[in-house]
Amino acid sequence: QLQPVESGGGLVQAGGSLRLSCTASGNSFDTNGMEWYRQAPGKQRALVARISRDGATTYADSVKGRFTISRDTPKNTLYLQMSSLKPEDTGVYYCKVLYRAYTNLGDHWGQGTQVTVSS
Image 1 (cartoon, rainbow, N blue to C red):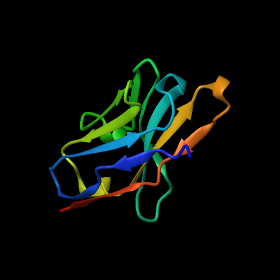
Image 2 (cartoon, rainbow, N blue to C red):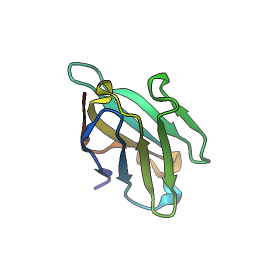
Image 3 (tube, helix red, strand yellow):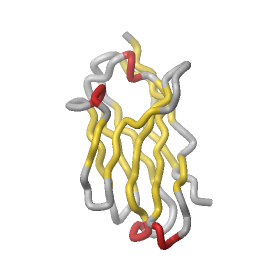
Image 4 (spheres, rainbow, N blue to C red):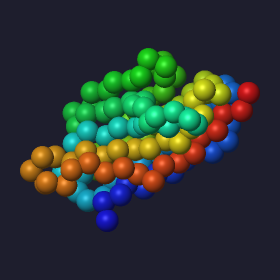
């Protein structure tokens, strides 16, 4: 079973903070990039942030300066620190783990965790 396990979602008021976690299966040496996506109600799933194996990060314009993606490589765990949350940040957040090519394991999605930001 290679599905990552997510946690940390919940209900928060606008302006508040939450931290999401995602733990990948297997050996961290086999893990390549890790990503967070968000699916807002009635919308398609969209990339929020990405971190490469060497720590390079990219963010969607809508979250720049408010969200921080990080990873703990020995623990094979991905984080998303979300601050200054807005109602439009509401949605189901999914992590995606990309394994290195030589493993032939492909990419795997977490089950999703709900984040609701009230105004």
